[in-house]
Length: 137
Image: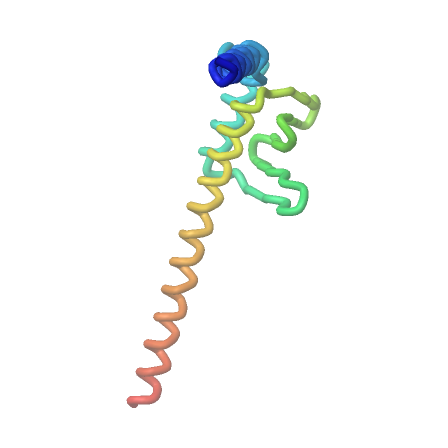
């Protein structure tokens, strides 16, 4: 009988914990207007051809710079900082949205790195071909 109450108490404790986590979780299902607009700006700059990207590996900061549009974006610690030549906006974003934006940024930077590596390898192949032609002449 004692084991029965111990199991029952554990189940109730677990059920209370799950209910509490679901109720007071940091994840938002509804985003604020500022979060929606700022994430849209972030996504558009990610796909803009004139944007340049920078990552600070120790501080985990992600930078986007677009000189043509005059916009700079900094993504760090669940914050999105958007600066143009006149204004600076510092927006708190929920953890889930921050992770999505960071993932989008990381995928874009990885794609650029891959293209750079392919270009670098093709230059090596081209150079080796020229060296081979010189040697065989």
